[in-house]
Image (tube, rainbow, N blue to C red; front, side):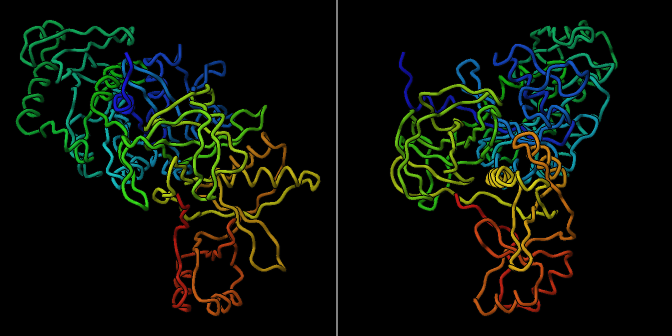
Length: 530
């Protein structure tokens, strides 16, 4: 039976997973892939040297450090759904990559450690989701360990994040006493087996008062506590309201343990029913609807050397409307020229497969010979551009140089490609007498990644010398004012587009300059045009 265009679009579910480091995000991603049939065995992030690495952590440095340093795209089919997971770095030093990746998502899954609750990086990422008003689904992880009480976690969500919650299921016990979760919608118990957590027995019941619960749980104290909590939820808890969920004002909560597979498949099935299909995107010519059959999309990520043997570069494109077909001609709006998209791929992290066609909501990879930038818009007809892509002011700076002058050509290629990826920001001193390249990053761990990638991917050793600056401000004004400012500043640099940027060591120094030059505007963000 032929599937209509509307059905194809409605079957797409594109979401990001956000969390604080060590909450279990990569593990949850692996288990979703496992249940989706995309991989045969879920990897482990930490542990013995011979353990399988997480599918989404494909970079060598990720395998060595056991952390995610770049976003991965993971695509699979589940029942009648076409699922695109955007696995984002949890570490705050790579938050800029995460923020950009969230622009390609229609919803987010927020992962919370039951023992630690809402943590710092979760708060930052939640704010980005809230700004975009996308639905947020919460998975409270590690129920097989002792942690905070469920009501305490719900209160924390409201007090810290400002979002109300509706538990889709409810735990009976925790840690060593963890017995089961009760599925409120389907009225069933999912029993936890401590000896074999992957073996999940599901028993239908009539509700919390069903006497079968007493027989199955066989712990009067836990059963009584469970019934009291369910009564309190029914009387005083928030009601399930789809409109509130769609607006990001109410988050459905799921309890489980990703490491032991418990609750993951239930979460996946509920989530796919509740999460939105592809949503509209704003452009400079109005809102672009996903059901518009004219193709359009935007580049939200560029990644060099996904396959080091081929030294390739891939631009990740979120399709916002219409049908993509291999070999089609599109308008590259920034360059104002027509181009043929001949080698599209879809992803399972580093692995990829050729794609003949794709629909609104899908993420595809385009071979990039240096044509694309983050934020570029591609359209089948017209010349509109999507909203600007977030691009943040670096807070840490290093002077950078190549150790071996004979490797200068490889160094320049590597530094240019990593800059175009958005992994770093590169500046050049403004004064011609002192020619120096300066690298700016949001988090200091990015320096380590830069050094590692230049060494492993481009065979180049570099010197990094820390500089005292903490603030970068893009400046604009009349030529005479800029020239007067430049004569007195030794901290003036140019970015890759020759825009002037002033670097400051501290807030006092920055405010002094702003007061002394009131006709000059100082901008915190340089925006990449979409």
